Structures are given as structure tokens and as C-alpha cells.
Length: 420
Image 1 (cartoon, rainbow, N blue to C red):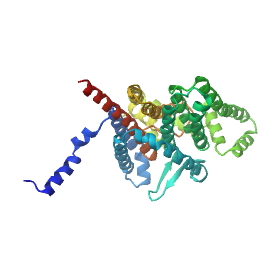
Image 2 (spheres, helix red, strand yellow; image 1 turned 180 degrees about the horizontal axis):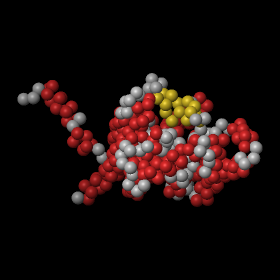
Image 3 (cartoon, one colour; image 1 turned 120 degrees about the horizontal axis):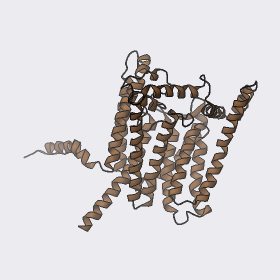
């Protein structure tokens, strides 16, 4: 006969049993596999990209960043696991609260946040001694709220006042608060939202009107970059820079990046220098790469472990390795679209698709910057770049997608059981 203490011990043992944990893990198994694969790639890439930096900053301890990345990955996987156990309808209830919290956070960050590289994108978390990029939280909150609105307004979605205005205003407000400090993130977020609105049956003419309005500041930046490049051959380049700087803190940086993208820029420019170093890494990598840990460009490329980690991957694993990473993200997007098509509930379908769009577009933008197909931005490669709060919010988004997938599987399983 077992005593009560022994019975309780066996119950706890079964609770934390690996097989029991795996049995509770539901959702799309392919997405789970892709997440594990990308985190393994992240460990290799981050360890290689930060080896020299760690040796310099921590007196020979080259594993310090690797250990930090392991901690972030384990924390991220736990976030995914617990988020996917929550019924996705909870996120519909939490969407309004999360969105209302995100707006004052963005406003506070814009004026009182931690300033780095002429932009205020972070707030410092008390007690944890960490910084959080509030745009990551705002992006997640916006897509949850947008999915909720689209699902509730399908009957009037073609109407401008009743359907379009209520769904476009949250997008416009969020992007407007993010743009002054991080224009690239605001543009990518806006593009993801437009795709979701298009699939959500919003009128095409309303979407085109929004895109036309959004293109006005982009055309302004292109025109200003062309004017500056023309005047840079004379003596008035300083005047152009000063006038644009007084107009708005980050405008000068945006114009400079656009100029570097169009005309190549000078080696002294940060953006041009980063892109040139990334090109060197890609050229060294060739088709099959120089091998894991053999990158030399990591010693010269700023943000090699973050914004430009894709260049290090291509250098060490070649174009084949770079193509494989791109393939992984495409499979991830395909599996999310499959969840959208199988989900019978509008909110779950829009939620899974919207979050997958923003992650896929972020990955494409990061890779496009690395190969100089897009102006330099500050976006990371999801699940691969060195961890931080951005990594955790990415994991939370994936956990929500898997929550939708888990409920779809349960519904299909119940339908099969009823049929039998």
C-alpha cells in the first residue's frame, strides 16, 4: 500500500514527466519543428557573431552571450508553450485592454524613453534592469485588436464610416506614434495591416486611398534625398542637413539612409558601412560558406548579432544556408495560412494570419536589408537575432498562433469522433 506522501510524489512526477509534457503540447507540429530549428540556428549564429565582442567586453569569456541566448530561448519556448495552452478566445477579450495600454506606452516612449541612435524606442523596466521596445508590444496588441474588429464588423466592412474608419484608426494612431523614432517598423506594421484588411474584405478603394496617403511622406524622403545628393556637390549640403534636422529629429537620418540606398552613400556613413560589410560577408560566403565559426566580417560589422545576423549566416553557411533560412520562413507562413483556411471562426483566422504576416514581413525586410534590396532598418530576424524583449514578444505571437491551431485540431477531432 502506498502512503499519501508517495501518491502525491508520483502525481508530481507524472506532472513534470517529459512524455506528459509532450502529450499536452498541441497545435501545428510543423510550426513547432520550425521554431526549434530556428532557435538552434540562433544559438550557432549568435555564438559565432558575438565571440570576439564577448572576448573584448568580458575578458576572454566568449560564452557569455551564448548563455544569455540560451536563457532567452528557454524563456521564449516556455512563453510559446503556456500561450498555446490558453484558449484563443481569451486573446479577444484581452485585445482591447492591451491596445489601450499600448498607446500611452508608445506616447511615454516617444517623449521620455531611453534614447539611442537619435531615437527613443525603449523604456527601462524597473527591477529587471532591462529595456523594452514598446513597439513590439504595441504591434502584438494592434493585431489582436484588429482581428477582433474585423471579425465583428464583417456585415458592414464595406461601409466607410461603420466599417473602414473603426479598423483604420487604430492602425493610423499606432503607426503615427511609432514612426517618429522607428519609421521602418511603422511602415512594415502598416503594410502587414493593409494585407490583413484586404483579406478581411475591406473595400479595395479604401485600402488604395490609405496607401496613397502613406506614400506621401515616402515620396518626400525620396525627393529630399535626391535634392541633398545634388547639393552635396556644392557648398549647401550643410544647410540642407541642418534644415531637415530642425524640422524633426529623425528626418535627417531617414533622408541619409534613403540617399545611401539610392546612390550608394559614403563609407563614412553608418548605413553604407554596414551594407558594404554585409556585401563582403556574402561575397566571402559564396555558395557553401566558409564554415561555422569562421566568419571574419563579424569583427567589423556593427550589429552582426542582431540586425545583420543574416549576413553572418550567409558568410558561414553560404547562399545555400541563406536560402534554407528563407525557405523556413516561407514554410512557416504557409502553415499559418493553412491554419487560417481551416479555422471556422473569423477572429481566430484573422489573428493567426495577421501575426504570421507581420513575422514573415519582418523576416523578409531583415534579409532584404542585408542584401541591399531595402534601405537600412532596425528590424531583427525573428527567432534568430540575439534575444531580448523582442524575442519574447515574437515567441508570444507564435504561441497565440499555435493556440488557434490547437483549437482547430480539437474541433476537427471532435467532428471526427461524432462522425464515428
